[in-house]
Amino acid sequence: MNNFEYKNPVKILFGKGQIAHIGKELPADTKILVLYGGGSIFKNGVYDQTAKALEGFDWMEFGGIEANPTYETCMEAVKVVKREKIGFLLAVGGGSVLDAVKFIAAAALYENGDPWDFLSQRNKINVERALPLGSVLTLPATGSEMNGNSVISRTSTQEKMAFSSIHVMPQFSVLDPETVFSLPDRQVANGIVDAFVHVIEQYLTYPVNAPLQDRQAEGVLLTLIEEGPKVLANRQDYDAAANFMWSATIALNGLLGVGVPQDWATHGIGHELTAYHGIDHARTLAIVLPGMMDIRRKQKEAKILQYGERIWNITEGSVGERIDKAIQKTVEFFESVGIPTRLPDYDVPAETIDRIEARFTNRGTLMGEHRDIDAAETRRILERQL
Image 1: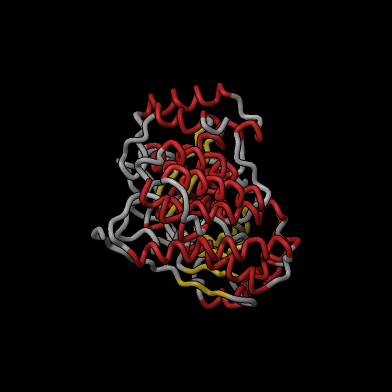
Image 2: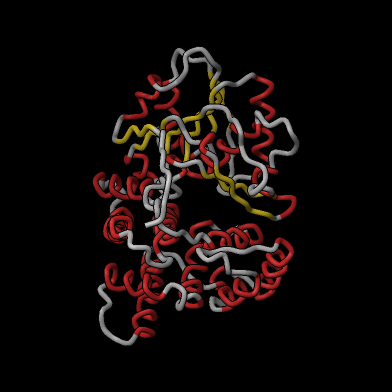
């Protein structure tokens, strides 16, 4: 096992009715900005619950955060934060809203240039301070409710990039499984696949004798495989919704990744498909992962074989055959929840691969657990999915 440091300061309020308790977590002497997305919180009752919990507080709201939150919208919110002297941000929505709020929290206090620097120069410019924030989660998927990660798109340049900082971790997050009841199939399916691939990025690398982390990761994968379809079949199944929601949080709260190598190239490539074609984040992951597993089968051989055996009970055949079966079972699972896995399924032309390869070449991009997935390797991964 590799050396590691781990700290997670996020307080979780889990279960039905927990939105009512957020008043105990909020500062009483500062102005609060509630931020949300397209308005689903007005239909499922979450807005009303939040407003009731905020009675007696000085607060205002900012809506319209996109499913892939944009730099442009975030900067409009930053103007509001500065003009109104906001002291606390409350994200009410899914991971996209949370990602936006994290960026806004950091951008509002950044005085040394364009806040996009946090993303475009994330290896050089770090977030040093940010406004405090909390969240009311309405869509299990990203794990953003319990980590310091944020992914933002910039419309003007067709870029989608990420940054991470402990300074933008929520002070608290409310996870009420009943918010899952009103979600459409598409969002549930996206959440299942998103969480699944988050685990894979921290698991499907190479062995470092970390059996506990492996078993924890496998437990989340198996739970998603078992509980995800239950949520799709019956949105009112509270227990299934609760298990799905907590699995998505555990998938990316940092615990599974301690002491083990991590990949994240599937995400890096997937972001480009969203940037150029607006494809849902989880669906880009479903496209890229099978190609990643195939093209990188030698580098990931031991862990793919372990994954195939422990998750899909694949124990027979040659090494190559077992890897093929593991990839196929992964594809079948994604497609069983309604998510296609090939580029033509999303009308992505071969020319997009040229654009991504050129962009990665210009950036000098190197990804993966070995930092050896370059622009040319990215091309091979994507061409496999044509």
